[in-house]
Amino acid sequence: MAKTEERSINLGQGTGRRKTAVARVYLREGNGKITVNGRDVEEYFSDPLCVYQVKQPLQVTDNEGKYDIVITVCGGGPSGQAGACRHGIARALVDENEANRPALHANGFLTRDPRMVERKKYGQRGARRKFQFSKR
Image (cartoon, rainbow, N blue to C red; front, side, top):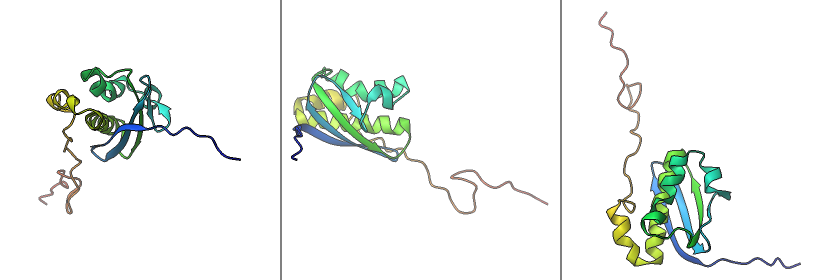
């Protein structure tokens, strides 16, 4: 038996990164449905602030309801994943239409946030925290 599966054409795609999270974003024709790891965006991100952050590039470029977005995200926590999704959506929108670049760049959505967790150093309890000093 042949499996009849309709393949969607990706209009644009982008990779977003934030902290240790990486998101692959695919832009497809549709009516505004955002899917993250096979689940709806509101279901995946329980925090409304994260959902708002993911939808920001669409609101800035007036593209809400124009595209279906499929996102695969891994690594990091909810906040980092939401930031990675936002970065990936912004890149995918620019890939689809170069006219979106000025609005997205002005809001800082195309810039990768370079802040990472500082590594733990030897001879210390953490990145900056030292062991307690004992004089005697």
